[in-house]
Image (cartoon, rainbow, N blue to C red; front, side, top):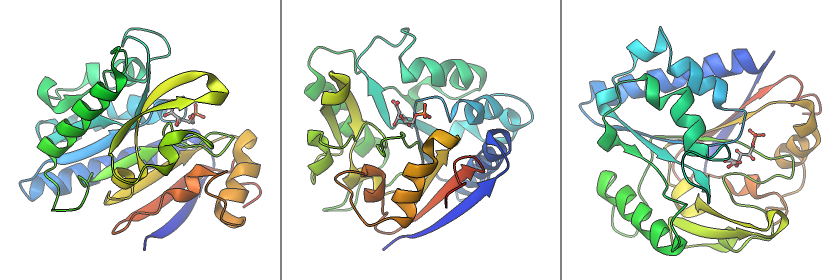
Length: 246
Ligand code: 6PG
């Protein structure tokens, strides 16, 4: 079962710099072994600074982008040029600024009418780029996750159907509290990853972070607690404001 570390940083800026160093290090290690580096990126506001750092000098020149495959953790059901689109944010902050081959950039087409079909196409892409061992899920090298103040991660919200998913790697997921559909990676593929890093910032998340890390195990209420890589590690990069109760 996974080991997890908690790293506390003075602020989001320093947390983001450390996450960028990790991205660069793992990408270079994978390239040095002649392999691809597969990373899944979350949406929301917290990871934007990390993406900006990766998309600008000096980081942008220090990553072997030809070896990198970028996946999304989850997506809102809007066209990719809409303000709420996670892909739009990731593209503006990072993808449009680095020489990542277009074929290595795997967008979740969550605007498609048949969301289940779009989800299974995305799962097929994961399996094509990261052929899984029999009976296992594709293994991402690195996943950046966020955590909502309600304890959700990816688009895996308490009470939503995809929370119980045991087989599929990508799901359409109706989120009642937001009255909307989302497309999301599921726990089977998240927990198959080699390394997962939660990026958590802000005092408004401190009580939830305490409950997730120190409180009783209630994954049906706090989905972030379900992130436990089978054969990998999970790290929490948190700023002092979020960590004030931990
Ligand atoms: C999304 C995200 C989601 C996010 C959390 C935290 O689509 O919104 O992928 O899981 O990581 O909601 O969001 P913030 O970073 O904005 O607090």
